[in-house]
Length: 357
Image (cartoon, rainbow, N blue to C red; front, side, top):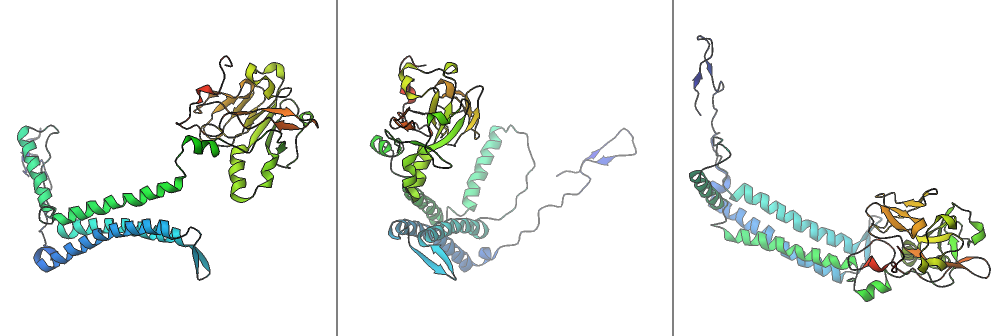
């Protein structure tokens, strides 16, 4: 780096362009692996061992996933541990730790640690400079030790590749592949059926049409839900929850195919937003709009639950209802379309019959 004298307007006051002397590069101190060949070979073997253990741990992860029962557990100092979760976490975590530790050791003990200083140049480089840069890249690859110790790169690639195996295995916990038959039995079906009474989800009392006033909204469930327990109860509650609203029949639009789905302006809709499945019940009486608090999808309950704003891709499913001989509100059957978030396998363009919208 030069230290040119730059003249100023005053002839007696020249200043240096670089007033601080260049300290240069600190003297390079060889590492123990540079001066001791045996130490370098030991570091090399340690790195190979760390990378080599990663596939072993990945295979152990898969074996534990299938061999250890999900219900297995054990107690340590009064604390209960879920065996499968604990061992899966240990094998996966240790595999990632070994890859990270091995890469750090590789950079610290094997790769070249020579310091280089270069003057900055303009952003656009000429061909000669680019050729020189390519030479330096190749030199860097040589300094990394890959040329002399090719097994390290193979071990690292193999270890990281094997880490994909546990990730693929974990996809099994996302549930069965959503074939049409499986969807029809699970996410496209609820426990609503013909004659099932609509009950208030707070006090579990059945609802009569005469109990509802215009402008009122009630959160409800199927009466049969409360006979279920545990996981089955939670699953069906998430799919079967509904809201019941009563509006002035003269102020709402009812398609011809849905004339008998309501009772004197009383309509029932799924409580689950068709965007990402949030439960919704923010009701605007004057506009008949129902707002989802998560992402502001807005549905017009006075017009078959169509989307009027927000990211939801399809209308809110409507549950056909009627009144039984005792005056209670009951379902005519299950929802005619699946409830909950939309998914790409399903065509929602036929949710309405021609001429309904």
